[in-house]
Image (cartoon, rainbow, N blue to C red; front, side):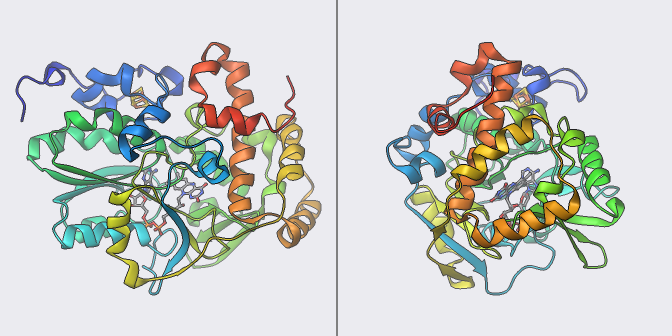
Length: 397
Ligand code: FAD
Ligand code: SF4
């Protein structure tokens, strides 16, 4: 440990005290450690610096004239994949957990930052520094709530670990990259997932109660490529609710303010990203950003079925129509929502075009939110790539 490091003199904030990013705090966990010393530069909501950090992490920042770079960030390759044998209970097929287990098993890393849930509540996040594959597997499945994954960073420095894998979402990874050099590691691997529309634990309760027929038995849910929310219940049954039938008027304030101002949906700074939205229904979507990401993916390639990414349909009109509908909090009657879901699933955007649909809808909504609520932040907080994406649409004032 470097005893001269200035952060060692800093003190973590107490659990319920106000964070430097105030209501925009995503509870990434940095401020729960002495690395709060770097918060002004590191916090994703105080100092957006994605292009600079991309250049450090991947050797270049994204090329705004290449459509795939503009939307999905720096990458060497993309593919659709699924595990030949899925991990039961994983969010999708468990590619994330499998990569982490292989890295630990083969000695590439000594520990893995991931997030389990508390004993009392399956959706309450409990970040850990896993040292065994059992601990990694116990972290499978999304905790669809703000999670302080970086709160274990002090433990890493104290443990003397030199090789580490961190699993996390964009805001956690931005802060991590900003303090990476202070962690005293020989090698950091970063495995990211896309992330959007996250909520506090109480916000999640409101979402479940407003949307599901049986909120207390939901085990996990996903906003799927077929334009429906799929809720999986304890008894294994799947409940599907069309996006267009969501009670947007009641749900308007449910998403965390941090997520309403986030433009890093695709986790730009991870070495490897595993999501689903750029892949056909039922498949996961993999984005290899750099050589480190490639090294990680190679470890599990023989356990995966893969196919090329595809793209079809045209998202533009659907996005343009969604802007005023969301703004006014329009909710369709359920029969109309179901019908619209069926039509749009048949003729609507698929594969990478679906991912672009989702990015466009969220970036336009978030741009408006920042413009109205934090006008002074608009110029610096919205990355250039997001401005270029938003400029394609007509926005209300
Ligand atoms: P698993 O093997 O089940 O592993 C899941 C991993 O996620 C675990 O290692 C765990 O540590 C980590 N994790 C769980 N909850 C959190 C959390 N709150 N913060 C940080 N890490 C966490 N993909 C898309 O393509 N589009 C989306 O819109 C999208 N939204 C997401 C929103 C959230 C809040 C999260 C956590 C993920 C989202 N994803 C999204 C990613 C996707 O849902 C899957 O997590 C991903 O495809 C990996 O699936 P898996 O079966 O390989 O993961
Ligand atoms: Fe601190 Fe993270 Fe909250 Fe920013 S988002 S104030 S770095 S805990």
